[in-house]
Figure 1 (cartoon, helix red, strand yellow):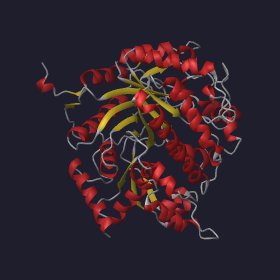
Figure 2: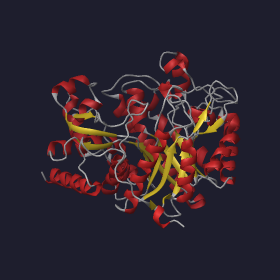
Figure 3: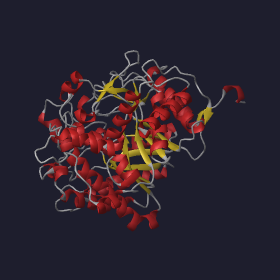
Figure 4: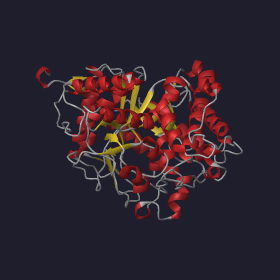
Length: 509
């Protein structure tokens, strides 16, 4: 009962901070604007991922990975698009450096392709061509005065590992550690910021639960929990490797980036809705954050609800258990908090009809009905609604739940279908979300140290192919040269970076 009272108090405080209640009738993205600038130390950036931009899927020794296979099988991706060429950044990376410099960003977040660096992780043989490609890229980024923020794994698991038991085979933990060691040893002198994994929630749930992402496996009751368990162990191995072997020499930071909506109670005056919102958050971001940032174990509410919904013959839970030594090894394996945030969900306890409509397993286990306000403005992506106050909400959630750990927002952006250069809607979205971030920093004292727009340019948007576009720069995928053309949002963001936010026009000049 005490915990529930604390949750209610938390949302009362958040509601007071927002000057409106966290309910379905909360003000939308036109909420009051706040003029403010962030310190010089704050880092502004843009982001990409290897498979989404590189192309060259089978060049220079790179092996097949699960997204290569998923796309080539056909029927999984809109219009049977593939990332075989994408933005052709493997050959046109110098053009990418040019637009990074044009924007004036302080950091560039991108990922390495495991298949390009260690094509066969079962042997561990390093592909020098892959190492050389990333060394050239990282060197050029640094020479441009931009910090590389490097993600080790952004969904493109080598196919040989998928065929060898995937994340369920514990040998993958040492294979991943070896890959991390190769990356740290070759690039560590140039890289200050590392991320071990991008969005393990998506990897496990969409790849192996509902199967709409590679490799397309649908086992929602068991595989997401099992595979997440080993991914967390992989992350801890990489962090400790850096901490013991490379930190003194390179003085960098290693963490993980987690995706999450802000989960708000549908009616903040109802304790059961407040509790449902907290439970949804713990099943989402808490699934991975609680072991790493709190105590080495899953959130108690997650353990309780999975246990009671497991219905196993022997009474065991479908959620694996960490040993005492594993908990100690996992706890504290972070240097900052990587956050990918796009939208917000409204929460209430699941009724019988809702429970019957969701897959047995993860979604059913949390017993929360997730909805959107029909008044919210919608983007091209089915999951993406304009709810700027959710940015402030999730940053406050991290502040209160994870000891105000330093946060870098590693992704935030919005989609359209046509890639128009006159993307005022994207400017609206970015301005309002960045403004809520500034409120979180300057008013709420959230410890946010960086912000990253997804993405620098239109690219391969996973199962949506090239039908949904996030870019600040337009890419013509029918043109073999793949030219990058600035949209209005690029010039808007350039101005925000130069101004370090939104200076009060009344005190300028």
